Length: 287
Image (tube, rainbow, N blue to C red; front, side, top):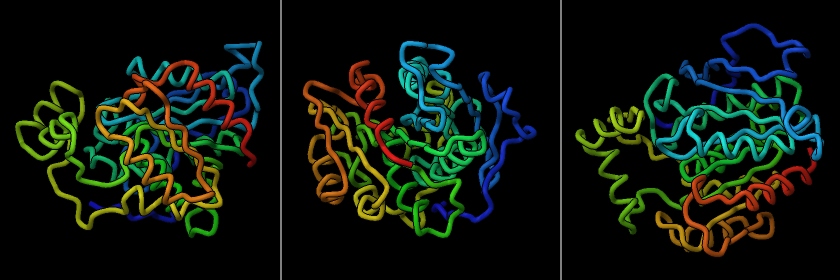
């Protein structure tokens, strides 16, 4: 179940959106290039919600949540609300999560879900689309930017203008912390997948990766010249600081690293002040 980017860009399952509809929140199911339906929400941004911080009309954030999240989880909605002060926001549930179709491949074919969401943001008129991923979503935005970027064969509407990866792993199969050992049990054991389905609203694919997808640290050097920001907490209970340091080293002069004092893991640990700084960084990037 390895990712094979396709030239055919996924489209929403609803009809074309007019400019008047762009000014109101939208919810629809996108269809990925491999046929999976992805529950997705578009919110127009601060022109509606916060007149004190006018957004850039061409800027949109596409938020890629962590494993077991979905578009309706409070921590995902909180992130969306923070970024809506800077531009439009697209949130979605990865395959196997929430109301989306399919089963989770824990970061492999999820790249196709993100590509569909980026294409939707561009279809709605946003020239600058910044992908922001957390944990599993952080690894997905890195791999997506490596596979869908300037000079790649994939259509330009799937390319991100900038990439922010928060609390991402650098390498696959990491089991060095207790939370990651529990996660591997959840993914690899039949009883774990039952807990995921009925306890966490996450349907996990039973097959192993074949072939193993490009790892985040292998993806990072391929992202240039797309602007890249790596964010990680120095108290992350899942992935210790050697992970962001590996990613930053792979990025070299091209990437920027923020190692956040006292921060834990992913969306739950991202303070409002940090989300505001990420929003400022994204708004400063060119198209």
